Length: 376
Ligand SMILES: NC(=O)c1ccc[n+]([C@@H]2O[C@H](COP(=O)([O-])OP(=O)(O)OC[C@H]3O[C@@H](n4cnc5c(N)ncnc54)[C@H](O)[C@@H]3O)[C@@H](O)[C@H]2O)c1
Image (cartoon, rainbow, N blue to C red):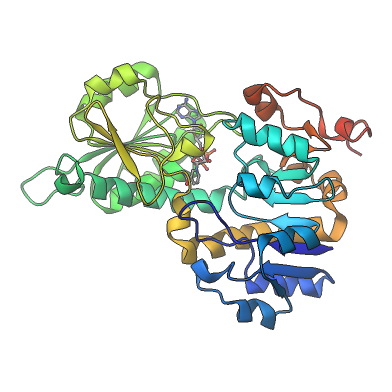
């Protein structure tokens, strides 16, 4: 199979979907790899490093989409990329379709098979291709929040860890999954007072053991969240209902309970945002203010640290890329039900239920969409 790697074009995105190590593995499996010139620049990977492992460098995205059957990317396709997709293509990337009806429609109309990293599952129902970027985003969330609390940036002017004789800031993390746990660990490391909220009691039990008394775990009822809001300096939103649009955990009318200059970091913004007042921002212009509260809502947080993120992402994606290249996407999906859960769009139909429900598209079960009945 011919595998194509275009340069990422989303604003402030510096990751790339395949490293030279990935090119080497694909070549050893007998596949051809085409990489757009400069695709690795943002991650400090040169064209020559790709060439040295057997990739062909092509001048532009049109050439990559024109030659490759399997397109591997990082972020959801931008309009110009959607326009280049055809039924012969398999697109393997983050898609985050639930909050984006227009993109969903574009992919349906393209006829391409579109596999979302963020809905691929492992044998335990976890999200192996989201997890590495959630680890990065969780760590950035606390760093960014601490920075935005500085007075010259519009924050309250409080240091997360305090100093001897002056109390630490209070950090509330809502959603104690991969993002939330990593955000909490950095906040603990910075010596803040940390509260982590979740609705899954088994998860709270696990976190309680991991934190070993260095953070409090709390049940995420609307009332308990609201009662904590007047005390906290930084809130990190990190909830996820797999593949679905994020639920709101803080409404606009609750901002009045917060301190002026407090900071909300909405990591769930890629699934539509978990604060009612959130809207996507970019690294170049990351924040806005509503009712005296700073909102940080960057939808591609790991893109800011590509030298970490590219390698963390591709370590996780490469085995799946190899499987799809070796077997073809539909046979690979038949062999691995976790990969089948990643197929969001196939043959002009939405084959992932939460995306169909959120975007108003009809849902068709993957193998029914292919006219094959249930998976073998
Ligand atoms: N902005 C970015 O750059 C970026 C990067 C990586 C991940 N993300 C996003 O961060 C979000 C979290 O990802 P994750 O990997 O940590 O997911 P996860 O599945 O590991 O964790 C989500 C947690 O949210 C909890 N939850 C669900 N609904 C809740 C509610 N109403 N109240 C409280 N808790 C609730 C779940 O029980 C779970 O523990 C996702 O939307 C993901 O796409 C964003």
